[in-house]
Image (cartoon, rainbow, N blue to C red; front, side, top):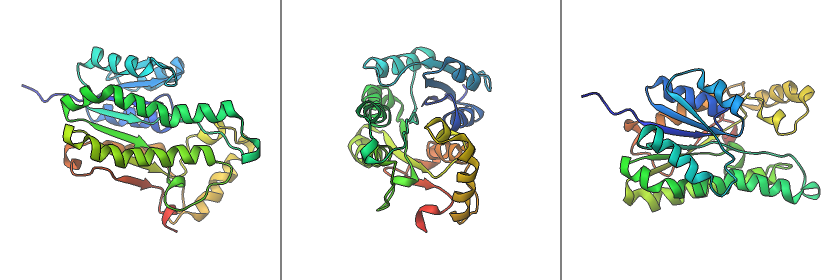
Length: 250
């Protein structure tokens, strides 16, 4: 009898880190459900492997957690890994913040993972599952992040949930870990409002400060997410792993 193939959910799976993570899990033999708001983007992700399926959903909707978990169980009969990757980012100083934009970031970056994990608890417990929260190296430690206050606070809060859930859910056999990417060349900053003509200059500027002298790629982050979910990584719990070329320790 062959080994059981794991079932993985990746939110924000239509591009960037989410797409690379879905592809990496599929390459490892896992079955993957990618979730996002753009059907076209999700289908582009699914084109990489027959092991990847798609679900169009807005995670801010009240019924989204049940729909996501239900779709995973319907498709795969189990849920082993939940990767909370979907995020919104909007640049702006305090005096320019708009209530609706702030709410959208907090609902996507913080409330959506919270209620999705809550909905998935029984399914994860049945498999001894793992939750991976994708944060940001920019919100680690005692650093400030001007013009990114809301995004940063949502990621700092997500790290706190990672640590808390690691302790709270351990008796149920569920691990919770975090990955905190540094600047990654996925175009996310442009989609978040950065002028496209300044994007390459921004990447070059950051690379000049990173000890590794480069910005990250989506596969750099996906590698860590997949490895932290392997059986060999089972003793890692509550950790938030920075993957930023060493920038956060300079």
